[in-house]
Image (cartoon, rainbow, N blue to C red; front, side):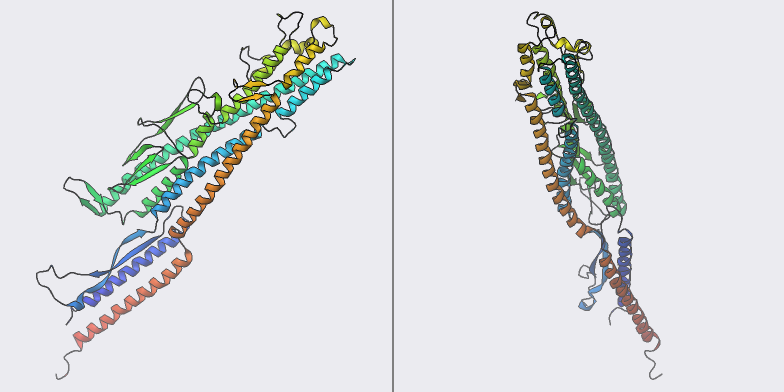
Length: 504
């Protein structure tokens, strides 16, 4: 006869497995809206007790199936899709940051509105033309000309102020991003330690002769693993990452080309500012260099440091905030230099007759310190040579007007050579092209990121319909297992209490 209680043991394992499956289904449904939660399942295997290695083999083939084994609770996750998502997430974040900052720059340097630089330059030019026309209202026209010059200066000053605001806001966001990055690295390192300790406490560890140990990562602390995966996904927004699973259950993380997490140890990122150029240099506290290939922090730093052909020190050749500040600086410098040089009294060429000057007394004219000279503001008619007594000097006026059509080498000919109006069109088109490019990159990467994210969610997220079906199936399984137990109990009762009664 077969072992008396073998059926009970088989039914018991079925009851235990079905109960565990119901518990996990309940847990899945409970966490359907939990951020980062990965759907779980119970791995089931047919349980067999090997008798070949025993001292006495039963040789009973009928006794091989002895119930079901609930091996553990696994997560339904695809490592390849995780890696792909993090790569795309870094690219998308970088393009999104660049698009946003360039749009802010475009809004400042907008020449469509009537208050733009092109409109102010045109107003100054028209006032100059009006002054060049014979009129009895010469003094009034001279005042209008100085007001047009002041309007042009105000626009240039305002451009510098607003670009500085964008620069300061970007630096603030860099500070916040670096802080969040370092906090994320610390949290991942702490979770590494907790996960490793949990594996050891569970007993799923294999020791080598060298004393090293390897954990069984098939079944582990799923909730801690979910928390770590959420942090790794967030980390990928800041920069490119490579994640390697280690034997102790932890992960080693390479961020921007540097090993930032190893076991429970994490380094931090910081930066210093170049006192001359204002550029930011990033570095890790463990001595490794920062070489990002993607990510929001790369987008911030490139556009903060980007000074195009004017770059030096910690700056780079990207056309970023620093570059467009340099563009406006060079524009202001050219305005002052060219018009001051043209406003020379041929009768007294050594006498200085500046139309524009610096507000801080500096010999270097910038967009911030450009102003209309005090001498011109006090005497608008000083634009005319003193020998003319209010009469027009056609040659002098021609020299002033010719400045508007003069080809000027901005940035020592390395940036642009042409007229003031041409330079405005040049940098405006450059901004528009860069925004168009970054928008295309952002939308393309965003579409791919959403696609991969959808694939991940189709695999790892909780489906209420699917879990509802599982719940009904596991409940029926539990009821059937309980019924088997009752049936076996009735059979055993018959064997014990009713067999052998005939003939007594």
